Length: 161
Image 1 (cartoon, one colour):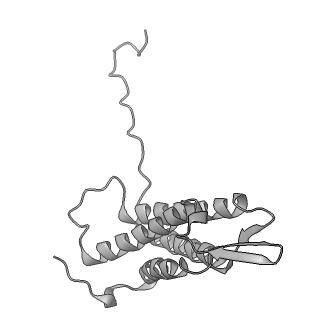
Image 2 (spheres, helix red, strand yellow):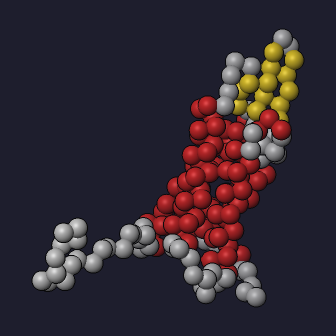
């Protein structure tokens, strides 16, 4: 098994992996608050009032952090992936950020409002996406492309005739 050296985690990788850990810690802060008639209660990202979306976003961020660590350990060197690891990391962090932003825009009413943890979660997730984008851009990886169809051989009738 590959050994993990914390000194290998540098630059953008540090922010992605650290952001995943930080987002996990922030998930236990107050994410939603309900207040009405002098009564108020709040729940964290794992509470029953979260509808599962923040949980999915946090898990996607943890997956992204895990991919970064696994790549640095060399654990992904012999694994055949459908896309590059930096693209997968970018997709996971980007999807997490989109989920949190959509939940923020659609999930509140007059008495139910976002709390401090939710705001921090959006900021951390957005920062992870930014650093994952920088990793992808600097890696030279390309977006997967659809295989080009082969043109008909010279002298053969065109398709459909």
